Every structure is written in C-alpha cells, then in structure tokens.
Length: 259
Ligand SMILES: Nc1ncnc2c1ncn2[C@@H]1O[C@H](COP(=O)(O)OP(=O)(O)O)[C@@H](O)[C@H]1O
Ligand SMILES: [Mg+2]
Image (cartoon, rainbow, N blue to C red):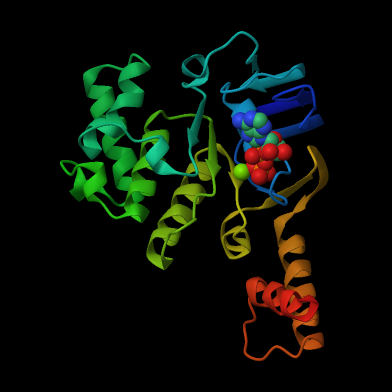
C-alpha cells in the first residue's frame, strides 16, 4: 500500500520555487531518511506532506487522499508531524494532556484516547511522567513527548524533523525503537536528519534533496557506507588523528586549511 505519494510537486513561499517537481512514493513499512544541505527544501517538503503547506502545482496524497483543500487537522488521522523544535509544538500543562490531545481532537472515545495515549507514552518510555509539566522535563524528553503526541494520533505516516537533535544515546535508542516498531506495524516513517549514525541504525531508504529537487534515492546502507568511506579518506589526506573521525572534524580541518 502506498502511504505517501508526491506527484510533480512544486511550491514557493514567494515567486521563486523552493520545491521543484518532486515525485516520491513511500509504501507501508518503509523508513526514509530525507537528507540534504541546509536550504535544500527538506522542512518545506515535510510540511507539504501534512498539509501545513499546499503545492502550487502537482499533488500530495496521504493514504490515497489529496491534501488539496485540506487543513492539517483533516489529515491528522493519517499523517502526524513531530517538529524539529518540540517547544513549537508543546502547549499542554501535563504530558498526559499533551499526548491525549491528538486522539481527542480526532474524535476518539475517552477510552480509546486513554489507550492511544498510554501506548504512545509507553513506546517512548515516558509512562512515569504522565503528570509532569512538559517544561519541567529536560529538552531531550520534551522531544520524546512531541514524538509520543504524534504517535498517539495512530497515523499511517510519521514525519519527523531532526528527531535525534540534542538527544543522548539513551533517548536516541528510544527513537530508533519507536521507528522500528512503527514500521513493523505497517506505518511509514520519513525523518529529516543530519545524523548519519541514526540513519545507519534506523532507516532503510535515503532520499537526498538539493535545491528543491531529489538528487538521489537509494538504500541508506550504501549511502552511509560511501559517506563514511569519503570521510575516512579525507581525514587520512588531512592527517586527522583518532578514530572514529567525525564529519565535523573534517569540516573544521578544511576550514582551518582555507583560512
Ligand atoms: N517561511 C519561509 N518563508 C520564506 N522562505 C522560506 C521559509 N521557510 C523556508 N524558506 C526558504 O525555502 C528554502 C528551503 O528551506 P527549508 O525547507 O527550510 O530547507 P531545509 O529544511 O532543507 O534546510 C530556503 O531557501 C529557505 O530560505
Ligand atoms: Mg529544515
């Protein structure tokens, strides 16, 4: 089953197009990394997937239904979005309220709402924090609350913007677990990320964007391996010591050389 279909999608905030003819199909159970440099259009594309934005040309179909004329709440039963910055998303005074909001808005019964909220909090490992004010949690856990709120909508498509940013190892492992379980149950996941370690551990397919268009779409494993090989070769050439060498160190060394 196709969960997400983009058909020759174009979009611009002003006269200039920042999404230029993107065609993409994502099936049930697929986990996709959306990669690319800053300004490539990744966040814009994810907002088009959940009807926060609408194409100027082309079509976005979520579980077979076009987002044309639909508001985010109209697609919320099929697609859920976890923002890059959880603080832009969280508004309730308890974790429980935050996570129960989605299913309640979707018209679930109180029993279903309680069920979906519990299951979601369980998945991110925050069941013991139900009564806590989200802002009394450390930032990493606030991000997990935002993820749980998306899960509680029980969507077919889970869209995550930089889901591991600012997370420690333990919290990252939880996100990886959530993605795997969600996909096993037939959901599709699209994650914008710069975290290649997370991609390698968690996601199967890598879609690369540049200047509003898709420039590569391939198994994540090959792409991560190629990127590591390049990083390793460059770090040898730059005589960087220590393993593993991080991309950031390579960038820093290149900057130092060209300064
Ligand atoms: N709200 C906005 N208004 C105008 N231009 C925007 C807005 N958001 C993003 N852009 C522009 O759209 C392009 C794509 O941005 P974005 O989707 O945020 O890329 P990415 O997430 O890959 O960094 C960039 O040129 C950016 O400056
Ligand atoms: Mg972005």
